[in-house]
Image (cartoon, rainbow, N blue to C red; front, side, top):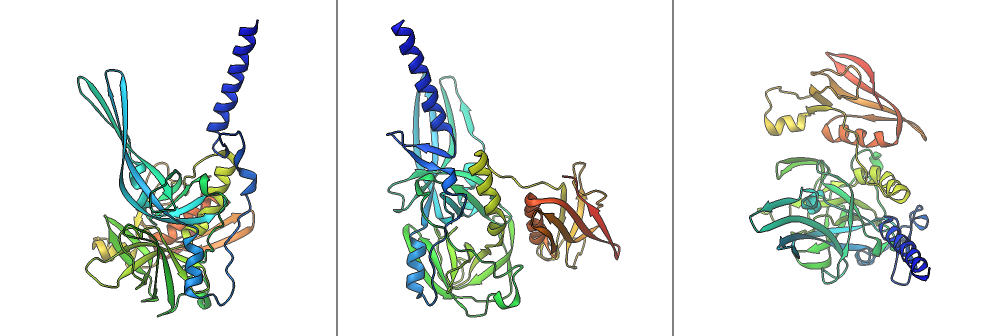
Length: 394
């Protein structure tokens, strides 16, 4: 009888321990104390930025919430029933808190290896599995903590990851100053800016510079065309990818993503706007259900005038909007046809009706992201000079 009772107690304890460890939004330490409670982080806490702070003071506040994002290659070797696991640092970048609870923004290209499939190689005597893991460090990689990828998008070169070790840190202040903002908020020529991130292998470095152009740039990197890039001359290097571009009011306005290795001061940041769209739904999905977030796939492929000018596409499209090249069977926009030009969308959300102009592939992408919050949507189409409205299937 005692053995039976002991066995039942052991089973109950094992179930309790297993459930606690696998619950993605409640974590328990070695003393069975909760160290990550979702209810604490549903409301965001931002860093305290007061008026008239110096560049040094602003940079210090951001260094406190900035990280090295480490990507390790993991090799599992199974031979004669024994498994050997080795990990090697293969790349790193930068990131910073965008929502309390340990939610960190970085570049897609920093974490992209983690999203690749496991590679398995089998011989007569050995099975080898190779894959990648993501870690977060606040001391340049000396001490690392595991992170989970919650959302990513290669078109805007952004990803949101979560690391509960840093759940109690406050978040950056984000502000759109380049896409849908008012004229008074738009970035200004030679306006001072600050970058915070990893300069090569040097953790938590800061530089200053100015906005080099108010024209949002396009650039190609690794086969991707990036649009709505903010051009600046605050020095960034390899390792700075995913670091914050900050204005002198203490707002993050961009995410540093690339530079021209053949130029001395030609650097680019993607607009922070996509992160502003995504962060609330990513946090809600994770804190409520422990889920990752995926955007709706509309079943449409096309180009805009910027892509056309870069690719010299024979279509010769030179208008504002998103030119529909093809529509597949799963297309969610009712009645959409090849040759249509998508020029706008009206979204009905819990907060009311929102209208967005679409003048290129990125604004089309932004509208797709906003569908995560919408109950209904109407797309405005230029079809041979006539404006038609098409609904969407949710």
